[in-house]
Length: 232
Image 1 (cartoon, rainbow, N blue to C red):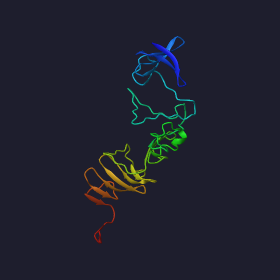
Image 2 (cartoon, rainbow, N blue to C red):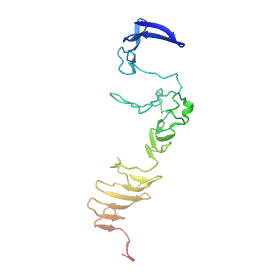
Image 3 (spheres, rainbow, N blue to C red):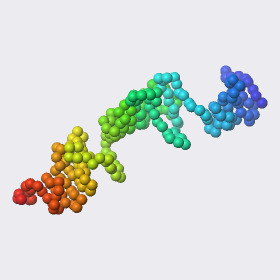
Image 4 (cartoon, rainbow, N blue to C red):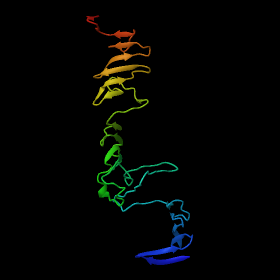
């Protein structure tokens, strides 16, 4: 059966038996509430508490909105998952970063009706940022200066550079000193440069050259060398 009544200043409408409730506009069903409590918008057979077939818009424009889970939150898709900032920007560089972190200024377990102002500066601790104005990623820094800028130590199983480098611009170098470091002068060779000049080379045969790029001996020094207290 169906009913329409009010109780404790609350209007009620629905069914008294194991039937669904449908809301119709312009002679077309727009929303359905099943007897098990599932709500469907754009579908007559919702499979979850809220099942929407179509896009969801949180507005109005230029207003902050929040989605919160009381425990773990799974963001899932049957295809790509795209996280996009400044999606209304149709040209040029981005103006809003993508930020990852944890914590806020309020306990959302006890304050479930929190506002954006109560969250304060969030995340309370920033871990990673994608700077959309420069297409750079920062870990431990809010202003990355390179494509990947890490403030802290890095551990990896392997690390590979896509450039061989040279004496004036090393493949691996120290910050602000690009002409001091290591590079690969040729396949299966290794070299060290300082101040833009190659100082040492190890060839593919294992010969080591200091001051020469073509060592003919296991150790080939172009210039004076000191062994112990004597110069040879």
